[in-house]
Length: 633
Image 1: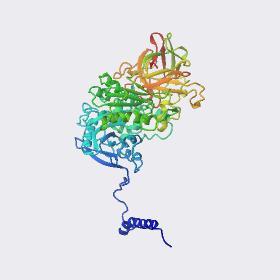
Image 2 (image 1 turned 135 degrees about the horizontal axis):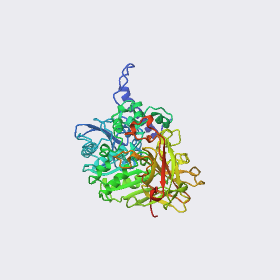
Image 3 (image 1 turned 60 degrees about the vertical axis):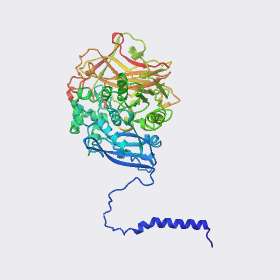
Image 4 (image 1 turned 90 degrees about the vertical axis):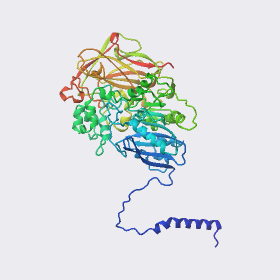
């Protein structure tokens, strides 16, 4: 029997291969069964990986070294650097699946960039995870609140300086991006920026923790901040507050005031919690950290694209506030742009085909990243890139579900929609009248149907929760238009002008702007009669004369409370109705107002919490209204 020559050659090569593989193992000494079987390290990035992953400790000007991960596809040359500075563990963010494929090891939103020659860099902020130094939550800029010589601005500068000198695969141009805390560090890099920093895309940045981002909204304290503080600042035993897995509504109600709750769980051992409890009003400590104010005092020299989600449950305030502050300071349109997408917090970086029950035309996050974000970064960062064609303002029109480009923001004309008799809403001012309800801190209005768990999907989608659970409560007033016969398109931040009085000496007011779907909706039965919130926001009454001037209210006196809802681009379609709900609590997201006067609501005692009658005035000289930024289509 003869073997075919090709088969014989193949068998010979196979034998040689097995011999090659087996040889090193055979050459090793026999393993002692009682030897120490722990080894010092294992490099999980194998030779077959299609990327390079480097970890380095970059020195800052004060000698502190920051842990930094550099990732790029093998063969990359002349690549722009895209930097993110994070408190959420740079090592984990760049080892997502411990894969040998670059798209799998990095966050989903990085694929479009590293597949086109970008060098992706993640860095732990000082004091966290792999970085040296002391951690300070949202470390303030050098100055009255920070007597050291370092902050996020200097750390970004020193990091960029090291990268452009030492990453030989780069073209020496750097962009910075990231969402939430990473959006904050992106903005801070714009203060006295490094010359190599050529573009920034801060997403849902933490800008002003008192006015409207993570810790307070218009003076009302957001209780979930305790969980964040615990998880962020404790090295061992952190995570969320150990209140069990039951109804958060009950847990916070039984906990009492914010101060009593914090003490019960030992949270006052955390410096950041003590700081928040010590500064319940908009004093110099909060104002001195407001990034929109800091940036408005400087000339913006780095082209910046600000991004926010229309239903951002954590940081809806920051990006539009920075945009308005920079525009008011005379920043040209070529230097700053604004993007509002149909997203929850940070959803821009994930698949974004829907939010709760709302479905969009395709993956809106991917659409934004490929059609607008990447071209914006390309034109500023890539060698020989085409000229920029960045929209001044880009928004996603919900209701019609399409992208929209405007020249400025807001893009509508403010038009009052008046509260009136018979729980109606009208475009014309009604005759004077009023409605009343009793607000009882012992039975606050819940933010969601109970039981409430402020985490996971429930937290991510609470701002699009059907509001029928609250409509009809005796402590909630609902005002509605008739069925619309033509669309109402709003583009901007609706403004609340609420004339109200209380029998108490303090009180909160919550206003919800709602799109009421038709009762019959065969195309999408789940949305039949749905009461979709377009904007929800609170105002703490003691600040009616100034956020830095808390004062008791005079019982029975009507005050004019003014505040804004989040920025939106939305169309109320024909066949729908517009609804406005008014209430005095939104629990447990916001702490309860005791409705008696106490110097600090954080330290209210059980006896301070009293029921009060709230009167909403409408028409005549006390015409309560929500001013809608109505656009002409």
